[in-house]
Length: 285
Ligand SMILES: C[S@@+](CC[C@H](N)C(=O)[O-])C[C@H]1O[C@@H](n2cnc3c(N)ncnc32)[C@H](O)[C@@H]1O
Image 1: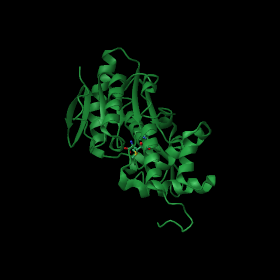
Image 2: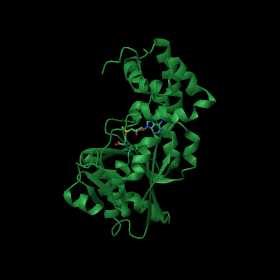
Image 3: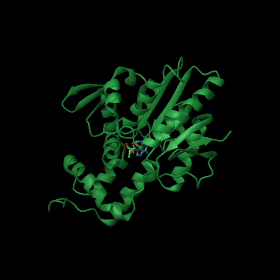
Image 4: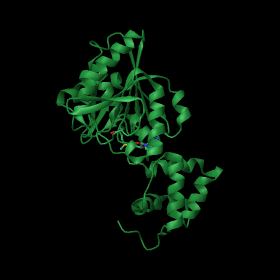
C-alpha cells in the first residue's frame, strides 16, 4: 500500500540505525531489501506517538523512557504466521517416534515430569498441537507422567492471543473433524476454544531468544521445538541459540526445527535424525 503523502520517509541512515538496533535486541536481521517493510510496519507507531521522523522513533526506543515502546516494536516487526499441525510429516514423526523415545529416556532417568519447549510459539497453534498429541498419548506412552509444555515468544500480542486459546477454522484447517471435536469447543460460527485438557498442559512466557542467560531459568527439556524462526537470524545468532538449546536439553533430547532450517553447518553437538518425510536433531550422547 503506498504511503500517504504526509507520511515521513525512512532515510538510509535511519534504516541502518533501526536495523542495527533491532538486530541487537532481537537477532532479526533486515537486509536493504526490507527497508520498505520496516517503514510500513513502523509508520503507524510514528503516527500514534506523534513523532515526525524515524530518527525520533529510534531515539525513543533507545532511551530509558522507551521500554514500553520496545514491546510494541517487537510486536510490529515480527512475522507470526503459524497454524495447527503445521508441517504434518514432522508432527507425525513427533507423535510416532520422537515422543515415545524421549519418554522412554525420561522414564529411564526416573523423571516424573515430561517437558517440551515451544520456542517462538506465536499465537499458540504449535504448543496446542503438541498438547493434542500428548493428550492422545496420556493413556499410552505418557501414562503416569506429568506433561508440561512451555510456550514462549517475544511478542506480547501473540502471547495474549495464545492465552485466550480461541481460533478460527482457517488456522485449524489441518485438523480432522474428530480432532476438532475432541479438543475444541465451538463458541461461535467460526470460533473454537481449546478445551481445558490442552490448556492446562501449556504455560506461556515472554522469552527473547537472544537473551541467552534467560534460557537457564527455564530448566531442562526433553524436546525443544523451534520452528520457522531461525530463518530470521544470522549465523552468529543461530549458533548461540543452538548452543542454548543444547544446554537446556536432557541427554539425548530432541530438537525439531522448521523444514527449511538446517542447522547442519553449525557443529553444535546435535546429530541429524531422518524420519519418514521429515527430519529432526538429537543431542549427541
Ligand atoms: C513464523 S512464527 C513461527 C511460529 C511457530 N513456531 C510455527 O512454526 O508455526 C515466528 C515467531 O518467532 C517469534 N520471534 C522472532 N524473533 C524472536 C526472538 N528473538 N525471540 C523469541 N521469539 C521471536 C515471532 O514473534 C513469531 O511469533
